[in-house]
Length: 131
Image (cartoon, rainbow, N blue to C red; front, side):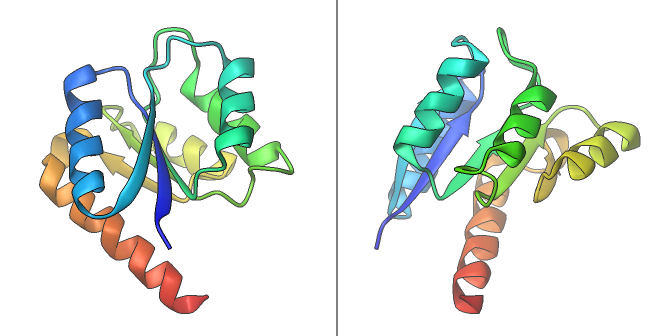
C-alpha cells in the first residue's frame, strides 16, 4: 500500500526536491508552502489523511509550533507522525517541539536531501515492521 506524505515547506526548491525523492520511493506526496492559513491547512490534513508529515517551523503565514500543537491536539490527526525539518538549532526549540508532540527533529544544516530522505524512509520502514 502506498504511503502518503505531506511536506509543509516554504522553500520551493527544497519542497520539490523532497517530493521527487519520496515520489521515487513510492510515496504519494502532497505539499503546502505555508502560505495558506492554519485552519485551512488543518482541514486539508484531515481530508488528505497523510500517513506522515514533514514540517518546517518557519513558514510565511503559519507558526510551525502552533501547527504542530494543533496536529497533535486534534483527535483526527494526533497519531500522524511529524518529522520537523528545520534550520532552528537551538536546544530549547527542539525541546519545545518534542513537548508539543513532534516525533522526530532534524536540522537542515546537518543533512543533505538524500541523507534526510534515507533516514525518514528507514524510520518509516522500521515503524511499519512494528505494526
